Image (cartoon, rainbow over all chains, first blue to last red; front, side):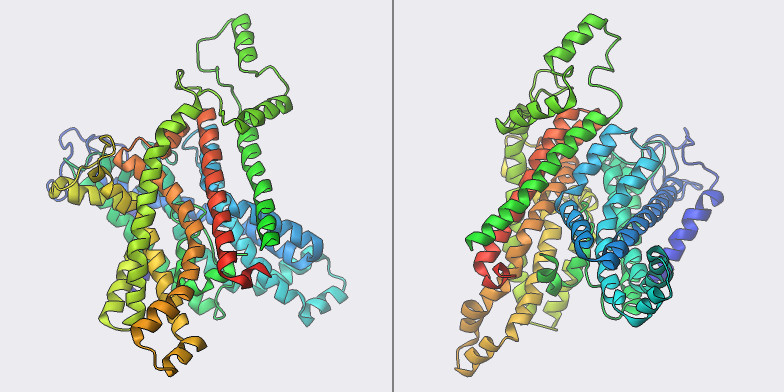
Amino acid sequence: MVAAGVILLLVVAAVAGPLVSPYAVDSLDWQHLAVGPFDSGSHWLGTDRLGRDLFVRTVNGVRTSLVISLVSTTISLVIGVTWGATAGFIGGRTDALMMRFVDVLYSLPYLFIVIILTTLFERGSLPVLFCAIGAVGWLTIARIVRGQTLSLARREFIEAARATGLSTPAILFRHIIPNITGPIVAYATLTIPQMILFESFLSFLGLGVQEPLASLGNLINDGAQEMQSAPWMLLVPAVFLVALLMSLNLVGDALSDALDPRGQGESRDVGPAGGQGEQRDALDPSRQGVSRE
Amino acid sequence: MLGYALRRIAGVIPTLLIIISASFFIVRLAPGGPFDQEQTLSREVRANLDRVYGLDQPITVQFGRYLRALSHGDFGPSYKQRDFSVTELIAQGLPVSAALGISAMLFALALGIPFGMLAAVRRQTSVDIGVSSLVVLALALPGFVVGPLLALLFGVYLQLLPVGGWEEGAPRYFVLPAITLALPVFGYIARLTRASALEAFQANFIRTARARGLGFRRILWSHALRPTLLPVVSYIGPATAFVVTGSLVVETVFGLPGTGRYLVQGAINRDYTLVMGMVIVYGTLVLLLNLITDLVYGWLDPRVRHE
């Protein structure tokens, strides 16, 4: 509940924050260069070295993170659900081939492919970021959906649907997918913080969102460079990021307990550094043996 | 066992080929070439350059050449750092990254296993709760937040350790980076150890041992420890992958001259060959360690082999 409150607060701040404060993300205030929080009346959380308001930038960073994570979660959902449901429903050799493909991608250190992508295309272009990050998440979703579909495909109502002459895509989208929304939603809420983490990771390295746009990752990077003289530049975005991640994770866990009583079958996914499967698995180490082939 | 090993090894090869060809072809299909940013070159100079680097050949021939060079450990010249070959750059950075990664892994194992055992033995006491909260924190905080915060605390406020840099590998320069890198791995190992120790305590053979009147310590060390460590062994592969990717951040935060930092710099400067080389080295490393983990696991636990 507290966590849900924190999320709500952050979302409201992300939407309304820039309206409340008189400053814009990239407006410079030459009178107040690198002032600390609460030192100057209108800069609530201080300013950076160029006199940009840190509150506005951080709140904007939260917004960037939320938007990117939502879009890329959607992308990975679309790919993952379609892929997994198709593989699980058709079964047989198609299934084996499709899941083998997922396995191979799984064993690639995906971060590196993302780095190659960001090297090639214009840095900071949001569509590339969306795709790069979204492409990371779909593997796990595909596995979960396939597992669920496999067990549904043998049920009577599916057979009935087939007997009435419905086409495969129609059965998939009208009967199978609606029946597995629970686990999908549960998993998607847990994907969002992973995506945020991944985005800020890339931005921190200088490969994601670029100046003058703000993202929590590049704010933390800026802050880390100035921490000797202006520690608040590091602390403010760090606190926001941690609060955001923690509360999203807690809400996600609560939701997945509520929506998916059987527990998500498969849950390796994007770890802090992308693609190595830390946090979700970490919640239930007893599943370790299962998730390795 | 031999069959199992061969199957595993055979599984790695296609993945490796995919990594190599993906990085090669993605880079080649990208718009623009390595010489585009210079002043416009006359056509003859351009043709000469292309010929020297073999860029006038069909792409399949280029791929074949790249593969052949790779098998000799030659990753080609760096496009941006003119006087260096990619192999030289990697050779320069690798010792630093390896020292960092190995110390982080040792640190995580040396603390994670005892902490996990402790929490399992003292189950549902304040010790257990304390360890679990530490673990949650270690897992939840990303390295690029922990790193700067540790540097701020120990480097700026307490003045105990250097904020960054690498003076010829003096140990105090990699205390903070290694801790930053090790924290999530430590948390995960502690959690894994706790859960599998609890499971092991329930096993029949432990009950038998207890019924035969063996002492608690004896049971813990000579009976429960081995099955407890199995999942930890299987996690070493993924953990290494994590450490490898995590080193990108840690080396950037603390300004260490390792390969992770080269990769990030290379990506920012669009040094294609450098990025490609690094990706292949790191990818191979991750795959190999996963392979070794699988083999060790198959050796330790015969059930796995026969699946």
